[in-house]
Amino acid sequence: MWIRKSNPQQKSADTVGQLYPVWIRFVPGAEGCFDNMKIPGMVIANYRFINYIDEFDLERAEFLLIEEENRKKFENFLSERKIPFSAHAPVFIPETHPDRTGLLSCIVDADGERREKSIDMMLVTLKEAARLGAEYVVVHAQRPENFGGENTAGFDQKQALDSAKRSCEVLSSKSIEYSVPVYIENLFRNRSFYSPESFNNLLESFPEMGFCLDVGHLAVDSRELDFPFDEFVDAVLPSIKAIHLQNANPDYDNGMNRPWKIPVHPSQRKEDGWCDIEGLLGKVLKYNPDCTVNFESRTNVPEERRMLIEGIEWIKELIPSILDEVMLH
Image (cartoon, rainbow, N blue to C red; front, side, top):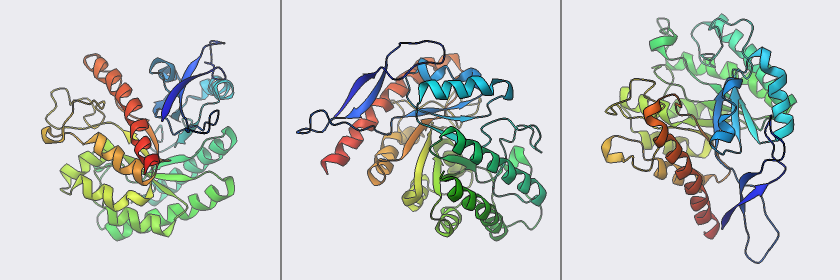
């Protein structure tokens, strides 16, 4: 059974003495014995959105693109709140990078010089993550060709896999040195690297690394590159260590603003073109109950405010119910 309990140890960066609820596991017959669960969190890009953690009553986060001028405030927040968190490359906006912010930096890149600069930036994030106490680091796999630049002629799936392996040789070595795992996130819209075979080949070569499943990105690729969403998930299931949670539907009326980042909601049905979020979480968490779940839906569409809040509350209730079943079996 899972219950919520106030945690007086958790404090906001600006307020002292507030109580924040956390999910904990109660073991019948072992009163007084609790352990923390992998409670859902949110991907936070830029320090100005750090208030979402309290606004949506969350107890973990994944941070990226923190501005240099806010570094001290960010580090103070981590020190005071002591919430579990992960780091997404780049955790701090780099001074220089071919992609300006470095968000499109990937381990697969036809431009060798740009790939090396991206790996250098990822190593900086890995080192910072170790210093700050992050649980793991997330890096992107492939560049979207539609806005990240098309692959050069001849850059095929074999060359893309070779590019990924060269990148992971460096990342894996430092990951082991810093004792911080690295998870590879599927981006989208790149025909040189998208199949479960490519991801599995890579991850089998580096078993110390893991896979971060981005639901919205996979939904886009499964439609545009014509492969079954569920078969991809089944194929990479043993490697899934983290999930970026959102939904996608090409027929959704308000889908033009990043249509792969629509908030999840219990009303969304697979037969209407949505991803089956409940089925997905059930499958992944039953295989790996320690998988981390972070919301990464858009939050800036006023018409979706109610959907966003209801969806977050739904997932907060759904995850404990799934893990309850795991414990019973």
